[in-house]
Image 1 (tube, rainbow, N blue to C red):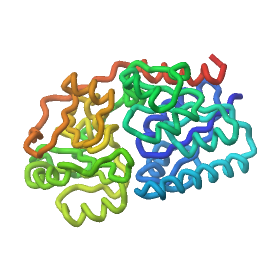
Image 2 (image 1 turned 45 degrees about the vertical axis):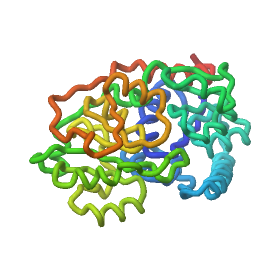
Image 3 (image 1 turned 30 degrees about the vertical axis):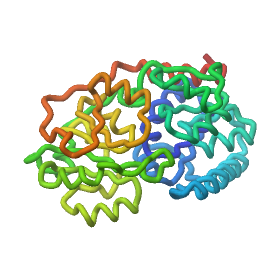
Image 4 (image 1 turned 180 degrees about the vertical axis):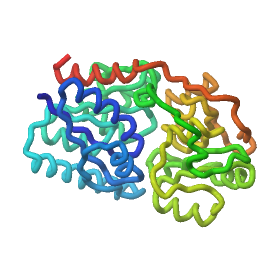
Length: 337
């Protein structure tokens, strides 16, 4: 039985890999999962009923601490692998740099996936990985820029969020289930990734939060404990969940969303909810594609946000195509297609 080792380093990766794991297991693939204790990754993995081992934590904002943490967690993963005492045929992650480095040092063939050109650590991942899976809208010039030979790249025809949203079930009104009144438009708001190397400050984000106060019911999703404490004090009238919530359902039932990152914007767009981005860095090819389609709007001031109830509900994901493509690429790498 072929054996794959998957590392989940950040919260969105749990949703992304869950259907991939299910599909691979139906094809007779044995899977080991490690999880980094960061943001909502661990509670989400538990809620998805994944069996996993926690290895390492987040290393903070500074480049120095990130560099030290990269090496430290890589060797923690190497120790985990050796103690597991079981041969792995393939390592798989969504640009888990620690995992890619550890796998290379262990001599394990490695696949990585990525959908954002502005992540400088692509220099490491693209060089070390044996195979790279990218969305078709990824800007081609960045492949060579990050040191990868185009021969190691495979493209899937869509967005990575389609992998897990293809069979999305909205259920009943999730906003009501969270106890949030519907007397005003409802916004799901995600803080900027201010710990990330590619992020260039929070831009208009804070002024947008102040603008929403009294005009919308806000579900505010901090990325870190520090953000949560600070924002809870400043915006006590916003709903800040104590535990991980069902993000896609919240987005589907909300009237609009605002995020300083990328994944939630794309989820919102695919689930038919107006999406606004406050991101100040370089736009990804995927987000430029959504912007051209009118499914995502970049804003630089609070006044650019249309605070109103959306008209109806719709889902814009077209079937299982992207999931099937990703799984076939993985199986091809295993040599079991």
